[in-house]
Length: 488
Ligand code: FRU
Image (cartoon, rainbow, N blue to C red; front, top):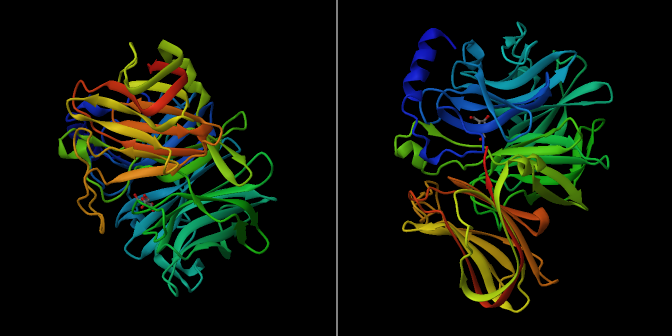
Protein backbone atom coordinates (compact mmCIF):
# COMPACT_ATOMS: atom_id res chain seq x y z
CA UNK A 1 0.00 0.00 0.00
CA UNK A 2 1.21 3.54 -0.67
CA UNK A 3 1.43 6.21 2.04
CA UNK A 4 -1.97 7.75 1.27
CA UNK A 5 -3.69 4.35 1.42
CA UNK A 6 -1.96 3.61 4.71
CA UNK A 7 -3.22 6.90 6.11
CA UNK A 8 -6.79 6.20 4.93
CA UNK A 9 -6.69 2.75 6.42
CA UNK A 10 -5.49 4.24 9.74
CA UNK A 11 -8.49 6.62 9.70
CA UNK A 12 -10.84 3.66 9.50
CA UNK A 13 -8.84 1.68 12.06
CA UNK A 14 -9.50 4.45 14.59
CA UNK A 15 -13.25 3.69 14.26
CA UNK A 16 -12.98 0.06 15.29
CA UNK A 17 -15.31 -0.83 18.12
CA UNK A 18 -14.33 -4.25 19.46
CA UNK A 19 -17.69 -5.06 21.05
CA UNK A 20 -18.61 -7.86 18.65
CA UNK A 21 -15.13 -8.98 17.66
CA UNK A 22 -14.54 -12.67 18.17
CA UNK A 23 -11.78 -13.59 20.60
CA UNK A 24 -10.66 -16.74 18.83
CA UNK A 25 -11.85 -16.24 15.27
CA UNK A 26 -9.92 -14.39 12.60
CA UNK A 27 -11.37 -11.05 11.60
CA UNK A 28 -9.65 -8.09 9.92
CA UNK A 29 -7.84 -5.58 12.16
CA UNK A 30 -10.18 -3.02 10.59
CA UNK A 31 -12.19 -2.71 7.41
CA UNK A 32 -13.89 -5.45 5.46
CA UNK A 33 -13.11 -9.16 5.10
CA UNK A 34 -14.54 -11.78 2.77
CA UNK A 35 -13.14 -15.01 1.30
CA UNK A 36 -10.08 -16.77 2.71
CA UNK A 37 -7.35 -16.87 0.08
CA UNK A 38 -4.05 -18.63 -0.47
CA UNK A 39 -3.99 -20.92 2.57
CA UNK A 40 -0.45 -22.27 2.90
CA UNK A 41 2.18 -23.51 5.29
CA UNK A 42 5.35 -21.51 4.68
CA UNK A 43 8.37 -20.44 6.73
CA UNK A 44 7.18 -22.04 9.96
CA UNK A 45 3.67 -20.52 9.96
CA UNK A 46 0.30 -21.02 8.37
CA UNK A 47 -0.67 -18.15 6.12
CA UNK A 48 -4.23 -17.06 5.56
CA UNK A 49 -4.79 -14.25 3.10
CA UNK A 50 -8.23 -12.81 2.63
CA UNK A 51 -10.33 -10.47 0.54
CA UNK A 52 -10.00 -7.14 2.21
CA UNK A 53 -11.03 -3.50 1.97
CA UNK A 54 -8.79 -1.67 4.46
CA UNK A 55 -10.68 1.62 4.10
CA UNK A 56 -14.21 0.78 5.24
CA UNK A 57 -16.34 -2.05 6.64
CA UNK A 58 -17.84 -2.53 3.18
CA UNK A 59 -16.80 -4.41 0.09
CA UNK A 60 -14.63 -2.20 -2.13
CA UNK A 61 -11.64 -2.54 -4.42
CA UNK A 62 -10.12 -5.77 -3.22
CA UNK A 63 -6.78 -6.10 -1.47
CA UNK A 64 -5.27 -9.26 -0.03
CA UNK A 65 -5.22 -8.94 3.74
CA UNK A 66 -2.88 -11.30 5.52
CA UNK A 67 -2.68 -13.13 8.85
CA UNK A 68 -0.43 -15.90 10.14
CA UNK A 69 -0.80 -18.49 12.86
CA UNK A 70 1.06 -21.48 14.20
CA UNK A 71 -1.97 -23.13 15.80
CA UNK A 72 -5.07 -21.92 13.89
CA UNK A 73 -6.35 -20.15 17.01
CA UNK A 74 -4.03 -17.20 17.76
CA UNK A 75 -3.63 -14.94 14.76
CA UNK A 76 -1.04 -12.35 13.94
CA UNK A 77 -1.99 -9.59 11.53
CA UNK A 78 0.55 -9.03 8.76
CA UNK A 79 0.83 -6.12 6.33
CA UNK A 80 -1.55 -6.10 3.35
CA UNK A 81 0.02 -8.51 0.84
CA UNK A 82 -1.51 -7.21 -2.40
CA UNK A 83 -3.00 -3.80 -3.07
CA UNK A 84 -4.49 -3.13 -6.52
CA UNK A 85 -1.94 -1.21 -8.57
CA UNK A 86 -1.65 -2.66 -12.09
CA UNK A 87 -3.85 -2.29 -15.16
CA UNK A 88 -5.04 -5.87 -14.76
CA UNK A 89 -6.40 -5.07 -11.27
CA UNK A 90 -7.61 -1.60 -12.04
CA UNK A 91 -11.36 -2.22 -12.15
CA UNK A 92 -12.12 -4.05 -8.88
CA UNK A 93 -8.75 -5.13 -7.49
CA UNK A 94 -7.23 -8.47 -6.54
CA UNK A 95 -9.88 -11.16 -6.18
CA UNK A 96 -9.62 -14.57 -4.53
CA UNK A 97 -6.93 -17.12 -5.24
CA UNK A 98 -4.47 -19.72 -4.15
CA UNK A 99 -0.92 -20.15 -2.84
CA UNK A 100 1.77 -22.72 -3.44
CA UNK A 101 4.94 -23.02 -1.37
CA UNK A 102 7.93 -24.36 -3.31
CA UNK A 103 11.70 -23.99 -3.35
CA UNK A 104 11.69 -21.48 -0.52
CA UNK A 105 9.17 -19.17 -2.17
CA UNK A 106 5.50 -18.58 -1.61
CA UNK A 107 3.74 -18.00 -4.91
CA UNK A 108 0.16 -16.80 -5.09
CA UNK A 109 -2.22 -16.79 -8.03
CA UNK A 110 -5.18 -14.45 -7.82
CA UNK A 111 -7.76 -12.94 -10.12
CA UNK A 112 -7.00 -9.46 -11.35
CA UNK A 113 -10.24 -7.69 -12.25
CA UNK A 114 -9.52 -5.46 -15.21
CA UNK A 115 -11.89 -3.52 -17.46
CA UNK A 116 -11.21 -6.24 -20.04
CA UNK A 117 -12.19 -9.18 -17.89
CA UNK A 118 -11.03 -11.35 -15.02
CA UNK A 119 -7.45 -12.53 -15.51
CA UNK A 120 -5.33 -14.88 -13.42
CA UNK A 121 -2.11 -13.34 -12.13
CA UNK A 122 0.98 -14.47 -10.23
CA UNK A 123 3.04 -12.88 -7.46
CA UNK A 124 5.69 -14.45 -5.29
CA UNK A 125 7.59 -13.84 -2.09
CA UNK A 126 10.78 -15.03 -0.42
CA UNK A 127 9.70 -14.03 3.11
CA UNK A 128 5.96 -14.75 2.82
CA UNK A 129 5.21 -11.10 3.56
CA UNK A 130 6.07 -8.91 0.60
CA UNK A 131 5.05 -10.03 -2.88
CA UNK A 132 6.38 -9.19 -6.32
CA UNK A 133 4.18 -9.57 -9.34
CA UNK A 134 5.46 -11.57 -12.30
CA UNK A 135 6.35 -9.22 -15.16
CA UNK A 136 4.64 -11.66 -17.54
CA UNK A 137 1.24 -11.20 -15.85
CA UNK A 138 -1.55 -11.98 -16.49
CA UNK A 139 -0.66 -15.66 -16.48
CA UNK A 140 -4.05 -16.81 -17.80
CA UNK A 141 -5.57 -14.33 -20.21
CA UNK A 142 -8.79 -14.08 -22.21
CA UNK A 143 -7.12 -15.80 -25.19
CA UNK A 144 -6.44 -18.89 -23.06
CA UNK A 145 -10.14 -19.43 -22.38
CA UNK A 146 -12.34 -21.85 -24.29
CA UNK A 147 -15.00 -20.02 -26.32
CA UNK A 148 -17.85 -21.15 -24.10
CA UNK A 149 -16.43 -19.49 -20.97
CA UNK A 150 -17.14 -15.89 -20.09
CA UNK A 151 -14.03 -13.80 -19.36
CA UNK A 152 -16.13 -11.60 -17.07
CA UNK A 153 -17.00 -14.51 -14.79
CA UNK A 154 -13.72 -16.32 -14.61
CA UNK A 155 -12.11 -16.22 -11.20
CA UNK A 156 -10.70 -17.70 -7.99
CA UNK A 157 -7.85 -19.97 -9.20
CA UNK A 158 -6.75 -22.96 -7.12
CA UNK A 159 -3.42 -24.58 -8.01
CA UNK A 160 -2.70 -28.22 -7.32
CA UNK A 161 0.52 -30.05 -8.27
CA UNK A 162 -0.02 -33.50 -9.82
CA UNK A 163 2.28 -35.94 -11.61
CA UNK A 164 5.04 -33.42 -12.25
CA UNK A 165 2.74 -30.71 -13.61
CA UNK A 166 0.62 -27.90 -12.20
CA UNK A 167 -3.13 -27.81 -12.56
CA UNK A 168 -5.34 -24.87 -11.88
CA UNK A 169 -9.07 -24.95 -11.24
CA UNK A 170 -10.85 -21.69 -12.01
CA UNK A 171 -14.50 -20.85 -11.29
CA UNK A 172 -16.52 -19.80 -14.32
CA UNK A 173 -19.79 -19.66 -16.16
CA UNK A 174 -20.74 -21.52 -19.30
CA UNK A 175 -22.09 -18.90 -21.68
CA UNK A 176 -24.07 -21.49 -23.65
CA UNK A 177 -26.12 -22.82 -20.77
CA UNK A 178 -25.72 -19.95 -18.30
CA UNK A 179 -24.70 -22.48 -15.65
CA UNK A 180 -21.71 -22.82 -13.36
CA UNK A 181 -18.54 -24.62 -14.39
CA UNK A 182 -15.00 -25.16 -13.15
CA UNK A 183 -12.32 -24.88 -15.81
CA UNK A 184 -9.06 -26.79 -15.57
CA UNK A 185 -5.73 -25.45 -16.86
CA UNK A 186 -2.37 -27.21 -17.07
CA UNK A 187 1.16 -25.79 -16.82
CA UNK A 188 4.68 -27.19 -16.71
CA UNK A 189 6.17 -24.16 -14.97
CA UNK A 190 3.37 -21.99 -13.49
CA UNK A 191 4.08 -19.37 -16.16
CA UNK A 192 2.34 -20.69 -19.29
CA UNK A 193 -1.11 -22.29 -19.02
CA UNK A 194 -3.33 -24.22 -21.40
CA UNK A 195 -6.97 -25.14 -21.06
CA UNK A 196 -7.31 -28.83 -20.12
CA UNK A 197 -11.08 -29.29 -19.80
CA UNK A 198 -14.29 -28.43 -18.02
CA UNK A 199 -13.53 -30.19 -14.77
CA UNK A 200 -16.98 -29.95 -13.21
CA UNK A 201 -20.29 -28.34 -13.91
CA UNK A 202 -23.23 -27.32 -11.78
CA UNK A 203 -26.42 -26.91 -13.82
CA UNK A 204 -28.26 -25.70 -10.69
CA UNK A 205 -26.10 -22.56 -10.41
CA UNK A 206 -25.27 -19.60 -12.62
CA UNK A 207 -21.57 -19.60 -11.76
CA UNK A 208 -19.12 -21.50 -9.60
CA UNK A 209 -16.86 -19.43 -7.34
CA UNK A 210 -13.86 -20.44 -5.25
CA UNK A 211 -13.12 -24.01 -6.41
CA UNK A 212 -10.81 -25.94 -4.16
CA UNK A 213 -9.37 -29.44 -4.33
CA UNK A 214 -7.47 -31.42 -1.76
CA UNK A 215 -6.31 -35.01 -1.66
CA UNK A 216 -7.59 -36.95 1.32
CA UNK A 217 -5.71 -39.70 3.18
CA UNK A 218 -7.26 -42.52 1.16
CA UNK A 219 -6.10 -40.92 -2.10
CA UNK A 220 -9.51 -39.57 -3.11
CA UNK A 221 -9.98 -35.95 -4.07
CA UNK A 222 -12.30 -33.69 -2.15
CA UNK A 223 -13.69 -30.95 -4.36
CA UNK A 224 -15.16 -27.97 -2.52
CA UNK A 225 -16.68 -25.03 -4.36
CA UNK A 226 -19.22 -22.24 -4.08
CA UNK A 227 -21.98 -22.33 -6.71
CA UNK A 228 -23.87 -19.03 -6.90
CA UNK A 229 -27.62 -18.36 -7.05
CA UNK A 230 -28.20 -22.06 -6.69
CA UNK A 231 -31.71 -23.33 -7.26
CA UNK A 232 -32.05 -26.61 -5.47
CA UNK A 233 -34.20 -27.91 -2.66
CA UNK A 234 -32.61 -27.56 0.74
CA UNK A 235 -30.32 -24.70 -0.30
CA UNK A 236 -31.54 -21.87 1.88
CA UNK A 237 -28.85 -19.27 1.31
CA UNK A 238 -28.29 -17.13 -1.74
CA UNK A 239 -25.12 -19.10 -2.53
CA UNK A 240 -23.90 -22.43 -1.17
CA UNK A 241 -20.66 -24.22 -0.45
CA UNK A 242 -20.83 -27.79 -1.71
CA UNK A 243 -18.50 -30.78 -1.88
CA UNK A 244 -18.05 -33.89 -3.92
CA UNK A 245 -15.69 -36.80 -3.31
CA UNK A 246 -14.02 -38.44 -6.29
CA UNK A 247 -11.03 -38.09 -8.57
CA UNK A 248 -9.54 -35.39 -10.74
CA UNK A 249 -8.52 -37.07 -13.98
CA UNK A 250 -5.77 -34.85 -15.33
CA UNK A 251 -5.75 -36.65 -18.69
CA UNK A 252 -9.37 -35.97 -19.57
CA UNK A 253 -9.39 -32.78 -17.50
CA UNK A 254 -12.50 -33.80 -15.58
CA UNK A 255 -13.43 -34.36 -11.99
CA UNK A 256 -15.80 -37.26 -11.34
CA UNK A 257 -17.31 -37.56 -7.91
CA UNK A 258 -20.27 -38.21 -5.67
CA UNK A 259 -23.44 -36.11 -6.00
CA UNK A 260 -22.70 -32.77 -4.40
CA UNK A 261 -23.85 -31.95 -0.88
CA UNK A 262 -23.75 -28.80 1.23
CA UNK A 263 -20.78 -28.39 3.53
CA UNK A 264 -22.60 -26.37 6.22
CA UNK A 265 -26.34 -25.97 6.68
CA UNK A 266 -26.31 -22.73 8.67
CA UNK A 267 -26.67 -19.12 7.60
CA UNK A 268 -23.13 -17.90 7.25
CA UNK A 269 -20.61 -20.05 5.49
CA UNK A 270 -19.08 -19.20 2.14
CA UNK A 271 -16.04 -19.45 -0.13
CA UNK A 272 -14.45 -22.26 1.88
CA UNK A 273 -10.85 -23.26 1.19
CA UNK A 274 -8.84 -26.20 2.51
CA UNK A 275 -5.14 -26.83 3.05
CA UNK A 276 -2.83 -29.50 4.39
CA UNK A 277 -1.43 -28.82 7.85
CA UNK A 278 2.18 -29.88 8.46
CA UNK A 279 1.03 -33.06 10.17
CA UNK A 280 -1.13 -34.07 7.21
CA UNK A 281 -4.51 -32.93 8.51
CA UNK A 282 -6.86 -31.32 6.03
CA UNK A 283 -8.00 -27.99 7.47
CA UNK A 284 -10.79 -25.90 5.99
CA UNK A 285 -11.66 -22.26 6.65
CA UNK A 286 -14.65 -20.37 5.27
CA UNK A 287 -15.86 -16.81 5.30
CA UNK A 288 -18.44 -16.71 8.11
CA UNK A 289 -20.92 -14.56 6.23
CA UNK A 290 -23.18 -14.54 3.20
CA UNK A 291 -23.60 -12.01 0.42
CA UNK A 292 -26.60 -9.68 0.35
CA UNK A 293 -27.16 -9.59 4.08
CA UNK A 294 -27.22 -6.59 6.33
CA UNK A 295 -23.95 -6.31 8.29
CA UNK A 296 -24.59 -5.11 11.84
CA UNK A 297 -21.02 -4.06 12.63
CA UNK A 298 -20.93 -1.88 9.52
CA UNK A 299 -24.36 -0.39 10.23
CA UNK A 300 -23.38 0.33 13.82
CA UNK A 301 -20.25 2.15 12.63
CA UNK A 302 -17.84 -0.31 14.23
CA UNK A 303 -15.20 0.06 11.52
CA UNK A 304 -14.86 -3.64 10.74
CA UNK A 305 -16.94 -6.43 9.17
CA UNK A 306 -16.46 -10.11 8.52
CA UNK A 307 -14.77 -13.09 10.15
CA UNK A 308 -13.60 -16.54 9.25
CA UNK A 309 -15.13 -19.73 10.65
CA UNK A 310 -13.13 -21.82 13.03
CA UNK A 311 -10.57 -23.79 11.07
CA UNK A 312 -12.07 -27.27 10.76
CA UNK A 313 -10.36 -30.63 10.36
CA UNK A 314 -11.90 -32.63 7.55
CA UNK A 315 -12.17 -36.39 7.22
CA UNK A 316 -14.41 -38.63 5.14
CA UNK A 317 -16.75 -41.41 6.08
CA UNK A 318 -17.63 -42.97 2.75
CA UNK A 319 -18.69 -39.99 0.69
CA UNK A 320 -19.75 -37.97 3.74
CA UNK A 321 -17.68 -35.10 5.02
CA UNK A 322 -16.95 -35.02 8.75
CA UNK A 323 -15.90 -31.70 10.30
CA UNK A 324 -14.22 -31.11 13.64
CA UNK A 325 -12.92 -27.83 15.04
CA UNK A 326 -9.12 -27.84 15.08
CA UNK A 327 -7.83 -29.80 18.04
CA UNK A 328 -5.50 -26.93 19.03
CA UNK A 329 -8.54 -25.18 20.52
CA UNK A 330 -8.43 -27.49 23.53
CA UNK A 331 -5.26 -25.72 24.72
CA UNK A 332 -7.36 -22.54 25.16
CA UNK A 333 -9.98 -24.12 27.41
CA UNK A 334 -10.36 -22.55 30.84
CA UNK A 335 -12.95 -22.63 33.61
CA UNK A 336 -14.28 -26.13 32.99
CA UNK A 337 -17.72 -27.08 34.26
CA UNK A 338 -18.71 -30.73 33.92
CA UNK A 339 -21.96 -32.51 34.68
CA UNK A 340 -23.12 -36.06 34.11
CA UNK A 341 -26.48 -37.83 34.11
CA UNK A 342 -28.75 -34.79 34.47
CA UNK A 343 -32.35 -35.86 33.89
CA UNK A 344 -34.84 -33.07 33.32
CA UNK A 345 -37.83 -31.85 31.39
CA UNK A 346 -38.81 -28.24 30.91
CA UNK A 347 -36.01 -25.70 31.30
CA UNK A 348 -32.61 -26.29 32.87
CA UNK A 349 -29.90 -23.82 33.79
CA UNK A 350 -26.58 -25.09 35.06
CA UNK A 351 -24.43 -23.06 37.44
CA UNK A 352 -21.34 -21.72 35.74
CA UNK A 353 -22.62 -22.51 32.24
CA UNK A 354 -22.89 -19.17 30.51
CA UNK A 355 -20.73 -16.79 28.53
CA UNK A 356 -20.08 -15.43 25.08
CA UNK A 357 -16.70 -17.06 24.38
CA UNK A 358 -17.48 -20.67 25.05
CA UNK A 359 -17.31 -24.24 24.01
CA UNK A 360 -20.18 -26.49 25.03
CA UNK A 361 -20.07 -30.25 24.50
CA UNK A 362 -23.36 -32.00 25.12
CA UNK A 363 -24.37 -35.61 24.80
CA UNK A 364 -28.04 -36.18 25.52
CA UNK A 365 -30.28 -39.20 25.60
CA UNK A 366 -33.33 -37.95 23.74
CA UNK A 367 -35.02 -41.29 23.26
CA UNK A 368 -37.95 -40.25 25.48
CA UNK A 369 -38.08 -36.60 24.42
CA UNK A 370 -40.21 -34.90 21.80
CA UNK A 371 -37.88 -31.93 21.59
CA UNK A 372 -34.56 -30.97 23.11
CA UNK A 373 -32.26 -28.03 22.67
CA UNK A 374 -30.61 -24.97 24.02
CA UNK A 375 -30.85 -21.23 23.94
CA UNK A 376 -27.51 -19.48 23.87
CA UNK A 377 -26.55 -15.81 24.16
CA UNK A 378 -29.82 -15.55 26.02
CA UNK A 379 -30.96 -12.44 27.87
CA UNK A 380 -33.05 -9.37 27.45
CA UNK A 381 -32.31 -9.16 23.73
CA UNK A 382 -33.60 -12.71 23.09
CA UNK A 383 -31.51 -15.76 22.26
CA UNK A 384 -30.19 -17.96 19.48
CA UNK A 385 -32.09 -21.24 19.57
CA UNK A 386 -30.71 -24.65 18.61
CA UNK A 387 -33.55 -27.19 18.75
CA UNK A 388 -33.94 -30.84 17.84
CA UNK A 389 -37.39 -32.28 17.32
CA UNK A 390 -38.26 -35.95 17.20
CA UNK A 391 -40.98 -35.36 14.67
CA UNK A 392 -38.79 -33.70 12.07
CA UNK A 393 -35.58 -35.57 12.89
CA UNK A 394 -33.81 -32.25 12.40
CA UNK A 395 -31.83 -29.79 14.46
CA UNK A 396 -33.00 -26.28 13.64
CA UNK A 397 -31.26 -23.02 14.33
CA UNK A 398 -33.16 -19.78 14.76
CA UNK A 399 -31.41 -16.47 15.28
CA UNK A 400 -34.39 -14.28 14.46
CA UNK A 401 -34.89 -13.32 18.11
CA UNK A 402 -31.26 -12.57 18.90
CA UNK A 403 -30.10 -9.00 19.39
CA UNK A 404 -29.48 -6.79 16.36
CA UNK A 405 -31.67 -8.05 13.50
CA UNK A 406 -29.92 -9.34 10.39
CA UNK A 407 -31.86 -8.72 7.20
CA UNK A 408 -31.75 -10.78 4.06
CA UNK A 409 -31.30 -8.30 1.21
CA UNK A 410 -31.63 -10.89 -1.55
CA UNK A 411 -34.84 -11.89 -3.30
CA UNK A 412 -36.97 -13.87 -2.62
CA UNK A 413 -36.33 -13.89 1.13
CA UNK A 414 -35.84 -10.13 1.25
CA UNK A 415 -36.58 -8.75 4.68
CA UNK A 416 -37.23 -12.07 6.49
CA UNK A 417 -36.32 -11.54 10.16
CA UNK A 418 -32.94 -13.08 10.89
CA UNK A 419 -33.12 -14.67 7.42
CA UNK A 420 -35.48 -17.43 8.65
CA UNK A 421 -34.33 -20.69 10.23
CA UNK A 422 -31.77 -23.29 9.12
CA UNK A 423 -31.79 -26.99 9.86
CA UNK A 424 -29.83 -30.19 9.55
CA UNK A 425 -31.07 -33.77 9.59
CA UNK A 426 -29.51 -35.91 12.30
CA UNK A 427 -29.60 -39.62 12.90
CA UNK A 428 -30.68 -40.19 16.51
CA UNK A 429 -31.67 -43.83 16.10
CA UNK A 430 -29.33 -44.73 18.97
CA UNK A 431 -31.29 -42.26 21.11
CA UNK A 432 -28.28 -39.97 21.46
CA UNK A 433 -27.88 -36.42 20.26
CA UNK A 434 -24.42 -34.93 20.46
CA UNK A 435 -23.52 -31.31 19.90
CA UNK A 436 -20.42 -29.20 20.19
CA UNK A 437 -21.24 -25.53 20.17
CA UNK A 438 -18.67 -22.75 19.85
CA UNK A 439 -19.75 -19.26 20.73
CA UNK A 440 -17.49 -16.31 20.11
CA UNK A 441 -19.32 -13.03 20.75
CA UNK A 442 -20.85 -12.67 17.27
CA UNK A 443 -20.88 -16.28 16.14
CA UNK A 444 -22.37 -19.66 16.94
CA UNK A 445 -20.99 -22.80 15.26
CA UNK A 446 -22.69 -26.11 15.95
CA UNK A 447 -21.10 -29.50 15.20
CA UNK A 448 -23.73 -32.23 15.34
CA UNK A 449 -23.29 -35.97 15.79
CA UNK A 450 -19.50 -35.89 15.76
CA UNK A 451 -19.33 -33.35 12.91
CA UNK A 452 -21.62 -35.16 10.46
CA UNK A 453 -23.53 -31.90 10.09
CA UNK A 454 -22.73 -28.31 11.00
CA UNK A 455 -24.76 -25.13 11.40
CA UNK A 456 -22.94 -21.80 11.42
CA UNK A 457 -24.40 -18.39 12.22
CA UNK A 458 -23.34 -14.87 12.98
CA UNK A 459 -25.44 -13.16 15.66
CA UNK A 460 -25.21 -9.80 17.42
CA UNK A 461 -26.63 -10.17 20.93
CA UNK A 462 -27.30 -7.30 23.28
CA UNK A 463 -24.64 -6.49 25.85
CA UNK A 464 -24.77 -8.86 28.79
CA UNK A 465 -26.81 -11.53 26.98
CA UNK A 466 -24.64 -14.50 27.82
CA UNK A 467 -27.17 -17.00 29.18
CA UNK A 468 -27.33 -20.69 28.29
CA UNK A 469 -30.57 -22.61 28.90
CA UNK A 470 -31.42 -26.18 28.03
CA UNK A 471 -34.96 -27.21 27.28
CA UNK A 472 -36.74 -30.46 26.76
CA UNK A 473 -40.28 -31.51 25.93
CA UNK A 474 -40.64 -34.87 27.57
CA UNK A 475 -37.83 -36.42 29.58
CA UNK A 476 -34.25 -35.93 28.41
CA UNK A 477 -31.06 -37.00 30.09
CA UNK A 478 -27.91 -34.98 29.58
CA UNK A 479 -25.44 -37.84 29.77
CA UNK A 480 -22.53 -35.46 29.73
CA UNK A 481 -22.10 -31.72 29.59
CA UNK A 482 -18.81 -29.90 29.36
CA UNK A 483 -18.45 -26.17 29.26
CA UNK A 484 -15.18 -24.33 28.72
CA UNK A 485 -14.39 -20.68 28.36
CA UNK A 486 -12.15 -20.27 25.35
CA UNK A 487 -9.50 -17.73 26.26
CA UNK A 488 -7.26 -16.72 23.37
C1 FRU B 1 -16.77 -14.96 -3.43
C2 FRU B 1 -16.26 -13.86 -4.34
C3 FRU B 1 -15.23 -14.41 -5.28
C4 FRU B 1 -14.41 -13.19 -5.62
C5 FRU B 1 -14.44 -12.43 -4.33
C6 FRU B 1 -14.44 -10.95 -4.50
O1 FRU B 1 -17.26 -14.51 -2.22
O2 FRU B 1 -17.35 -13.29 -5.04
O3 FRU B 1 -15.75 -15.06 -6.42
O4 FRU B 1 -13.12 -13.51 -6.01
O5 FRU B 1 -15.60 -12.84 -3.64
O6 FRU B 1 -14.20 -10.29 -3.31
